[in-house]
Image (cartoon, rainbow, N blue to C red; front, side, top):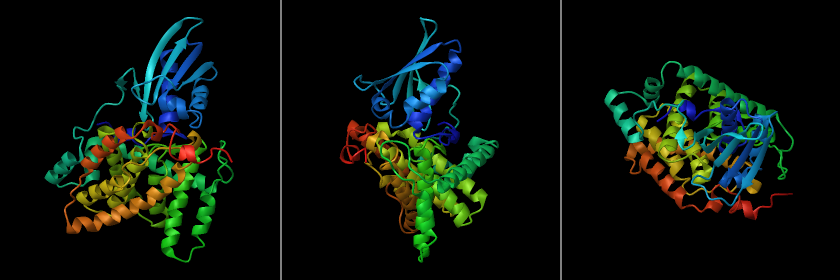
Length: 402
């Protein structure tokens, strides 16, 4: 299992698989073929079906600029992975190189069927059961186990992730206007934030504040702003909203929050390793569902719950998102994505609270490993129309123009 650094990445929205991944593929081609005079890009599967709404063509053109490139959206060819693309590099007239890329989620790519050699596996334990057994044997917390594996330099990286999450939310809270695209959706994070401060009920205030932070991050993402994959860009509002809320409103110490972020990253890592975090592969259960599991683990960790309670919180967060479809209206990461992040942030807190008391009265019958396996099996059963293709669900019911 690779470093948690591969779960948390900073980059431009609106999609880690449809924007960030293709950008990385284009950069790889530029590095490999600096003499290229033109590129030809063919997008397949979900990349072809929702690439326009996800700005896939725009990020590819921007990355290759000033070298010209031609982009083809091929919705007919069947491919093994729904996020497949082929890029061909040309010299004056002849082909000088061609590679097949798969954007597997979270901004990660596989090249010609192989994982990137620059991303070595550093975790020998790849299930929560095995990690829990190790921590129990050595009498350590999950965040301490992560520190053992990741090394001393990891804290510097996590400080960077923490700062960018706060910056993304803070920037989004100040922005108003209409998000780009035919949906003409108004930014409402700022208005939600203002509403929160006019509430008489403290519980309503906290709930609205958390929602405003999730909206802020996701509105930044939808407009192509800089966000953090957590574990993806489509789910980039859940964890940052919790981080912002716990740090600014609840006054949790920064070190406690960083420990929580590490534990959340471990959960995301387990989901990606043993299932997927790609909406095109398994629906939104793999994105917002995984983010809710990460968020629940974050909250439980910040509250210094036990390792078993943290796992229970993550399991609850993911279990109750099983079967969640990915059906973006117009192919944009807006409806239902933005609101869905705000809801999942609330559910993260609920899951951690429930886990805290459930584990005091009974042993959890359903493990996190079981739920991750179930999510993977469920994703395979979902029809393509409900996996980031914009061919079913809300995408065919809700008009994509005002």
